[in-house]
Each structure stands twice: as C-alpha cells, then as structure tokens.
Length: 624
Ligand code: FAD
Image 1 (cartoon, rainbow, N blue to C red):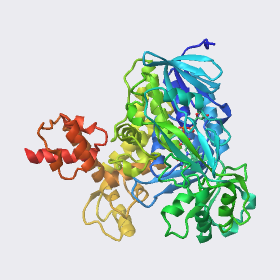
Image 2: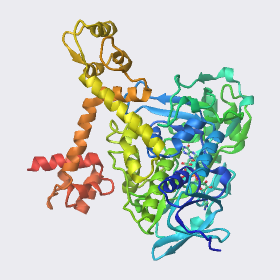
Image 3: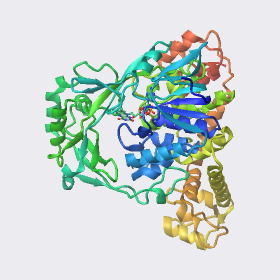
Image 4: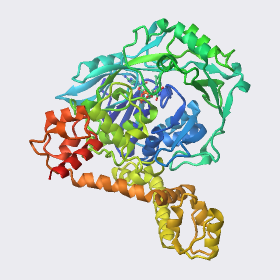
C-alpha cells in the first residue's frame, strides 16, 4: 500500500546517525519519518556504553552546538564523567562519560517522541524507490510505500551483517537484531563501490561474580564535568566508579594457543577491523612483547549487574573467552552474561558522496554513519546531523551546507571521508585536524551555534542561553583588557604572593592572565579593582583559554586566512610536482596526473591535504 501522508524526509535506521538525522530534519520544520527495525532499540549503544573521549568529545560538543541530542542524552544518562588529557593543552582535552545504556536510550527516545514534525515507524526498509536517478521514497519489507523528497540511510552494521563467535557464524545486524539483507542487495545493485568491514565487542560480565578488592578503582572527576552546553550536574544520575584489571602472560598464552579457532586468524573474516579499537587477540598478536594490557571494567548501568570489560573485544570461541576472562586477577570466578563477537558488514565507499553526504549517483539520497566506513557513536551522530540537515535543505530546495576543516571536526571528518575514502573503520582523533587549536571542545558553541541558528537547527531556549554566554565572555574579556593593576597596589601585592614576583610596572589583567602560574580565579577577584568577575564556569574557562592561547590562536587564524586568500592562485601548467620539496610521493603523483589550474582546485583533489597546499603555496612564492 501507499502510505497516505507524504514526507519531506525519510530517515532509515534509529541508531546514532539516524536519530540525529531525523531530529535535525524535524527541527528545521520538515515533515520527517524515522523508519527503524525496532522502536525499542532507538539510540541503542551496540558496543561500549560510553560517549566522548579523545577527538570524539569534540564531535559530541559540535552536535550539541548544532542543537543535537547526543550531549544532553549523555548528561541525562552519564554515570561517570572524566576529562582526559586534563593536564595537557585545551586543544586535546576531551570529556568522556560512562553511560547507563538504558537511561541513555530512554533520553534519546524521549527527545524523538517529543520532537514536533517527527513520526516514528517500526518496520524494516527493504527497497528504495528510485526514478531517473533520484530517490522518491522507501518500501518496507512488508510492502508499505512511503514517499518523500529525500531519504537518509543510516543502517549501521546491519547491511549484510554476519556475526562470528569462533568459527560459528550467524546472520545479524548486531547480537539479537536481524540483518538488513534485502536493502543490502538493493544497494549493491546501484552503482556505488561497496566493501566489507568488521568490528567486535567483548563478552559482558556479571558484577556479582567479580572480586573488586583485586581491582584498581577509578572514580570520576570532581567536580563532575558536564557535556552539553545546556547540561548541568543536576541532570546527572548517581555517579559510580569504574575499575581497572590487567591481562597477564597466562591470558596471552591462552589466546596464542587458540588463534587457529579465531575467525580473524583462520581467514574466515575478510573485513578489516578498527585499528584503534583492536580485539584482544589482535593486541597480543601485534604487541607480542607486552606482557599485560589494561582492561577497564565499566558498569553498564545503575540498575543492572552487567559489566563491560573494555579492552578484551574478541571473536574467539566461547570456551576460550571464558578461559581468557577467568585468567585475569579479580575475574577468576567471573560469569559471562553475553559472549563477545565480531560482526562483518557492508559499507559504501564515502568517495561516492558529496560534502553534504548526498550520494553522487542517486540524487536526494544521503548516507550517514557506519554505512560510510566510520566507527563510533559520535562519528555516526555527527554525520547523521549533517545528512539530516542537508536532506531537509534539499527538500526545501536550498543549497547544501557543510562546515570547512577549519570550522569543525565535523568538517574534517566529512572532508577526510569523501576525499580520501577509508580502508578500515575510520575514527576521529585530534591529530586529524590541522587547526586543532581553533577546534576545541570548549568552543564548539562559539564556532557553530550561530550558523546552526541560521540553518534553523537551534531553538529559542538554546539560542538565548548561547547569546547570554557569548555576551558574558565578551564583557569579561573587555574588562580584563581595560583593567590595569598598578605596582604597589593591593592587587599587585596579591599577585606577588601568588607568583613570588613583584610587578615592576602597571599591567592589564588580560596580560597577567597569560602568565602560566596564574589562572582566571587568581586574577578575577583581585582586591580594589573595578567590575565584577564572572562565576559561570564555562564563561570563566573560555575567558582563560582565549587569554592564555591568544597568540597561537591568532597565528592559526592567519594561516587559514592566508590559504583562503591564495585559493585563486594559478598553478603553472609546466609545474614539475616531482621537484616540490616536502610533498609525499603519492601527492606529487596525484597532482602531476590531475594538473589542477588553481590552488583551490588542487586542494579539492582526493588525498591533497591542507598541509600539502601550504607547501605548494610556499613553492609558488619561491618560483616568483
Ligand atoms: P547503528 O547504531 O548500528 O544503528 C543502525 C540502525 O539502523 C539500527 O537501529 C537498526 O535497527 C536500523 N536499521 C538497519 N537496517 C534497517 C532497515 N533496513 N530498516 C530499518 N531500520 C534499519 N564503535 C566503536 O567506536 N568502537 C567499538 O569498539 C565498536 N564496536 C562495535 C562492536 C559491535 C559488535 C557493533 C555492532 C558495533 C560496534 N561499534 C563500535 C560501532 C558502533 O556501534 C557504531 O559505530 C554506531 O552504532 C554506528 O551508528 P549508526 O547510527 O551508523 O548505526
């Protein structure tokens, strides 16, 4: 049957990409249908119950800055929060939250159910309606036809999913869920490049069978960090500790002795796995000289005894999994509640996508999430938001929007994917962003919320909170720039007490704040000065970071401006790229073959990085 209502946007898949896509499209006023296998699994965390971490928290904050759900759901479901790299510079600081997976899922479902313009429907999508290279709608596996202007595919690990436990195989999208085979076949018939990837998950453990006295406790940070720009500590449920265990030589012996029963090492699995989240068998094989690996024992939630042993993802047979787990100190009597497994699935070469995440071959069809070769909830959510907003813009006949590499990690993620493609599950790292001093997790709102408002993604509540914060930052920066501390004054004496150095002349507060031994709290409330300091932690943090790193930030901004100014610079037709020092062999070859006419054209060639464009620019200047 034809469903009687027509939609602007249909999103297939209610995982992390699909939920952000559907919410973004609906926030922009488009009638949106979220079609998913099972309403009970909306926002389900397939693997570890944690959000954020290095590079990933930046994406979560960007999703949040654009009005998305992941940050707020984490504040509502987070049971342990920590700032990683807290002692390092602000560019690489990253917040990570352990989540109660039931509370997280409930938070996402609540937001979806309460979102105006959004309709949920539980069914498997089996086919796409495509006419004249344009998608027109979706047909469910039971034959219901839904029509729409644009369609976003967010099917995760489900396309042609095969689950491996030892040498046993079964078909599934993840444990307990069916695969998406009809849709996988339909997509394989379209002109996209398709390949297989693999990922895995550890066995889950029953906390009642663990001897915690043998493990190292790891509490969360105090004060508890908050993820969303609209979040607060009061939103957090009760906080709990994680624990740390260690594999040992006996564990590694068991794994080595059973590698022939591993689907990865016996050649049964062909898909490439995530390099930065390897299975335990991969780790002991690759780092054979290491006699121990850390295992983080993480609670799955407040109302369950299940634990997630982070670090021993495996697809070894169940009997080996049990031996491996029980060889670890403190886990000698552990009961496994769910076996670990690996899953292989179809992904589509992201080089067949545009910056908007629309496919190049089928108009109005967008791909987001694990289907594009990425791994991780945050990478999926960020792509979902971008695809959802562009599907909505397409439905409204508006031009596509995507952030640049110097504006957002989301820009880096999409640019990397569509220009370089990927041969292994792609995860985000701060090292992937060349302008990481500008793209910090603390300033994602200052970078993106105004654009989000213009795109129609930001509601009045978020906009008002953002405007108040931005105004407070500007006001306090002005106060620090214009307030002077005179030598011999009470304020100068306080600074001397703090730093052991007397002020020989007058200084502005802004300059004092640049000193490494002083933080905002030290200079904010100096005696005898005009104006009131700010108590809002986020504003204070921002003022401090901007003051301390201004020099570096300005330099990075100049570099970006310089590149933008020179984008139109012509590249001589006779330029011998083999003679350009500093370029990799691969880039020299690509440029030599493509012979771009301008620097801008060169920068858009797949694999030509911004660093390579900088080298080209220097070379051109030398030639003149
Ligand atoms: P998913 O979260 O997979 O969601 C897909 C959604 O689409 C599901 O709701 C599904 O029901 C629905 N769907 C699929 N097909 C259809 C259809 N035809 N019709 C209707 N609905 C459909 N990430 C890491 O960062 N590190 C890890 O170590 C890690 N390990 C993993 C281990 C396993 C076993 C699995 C399964 C995943 C693992 N992940 C890991 C990946 C992480 O779960 C994904 O990156 C993330 O969930 C991707 O989000 P997504 O929205 O793209 O897809």
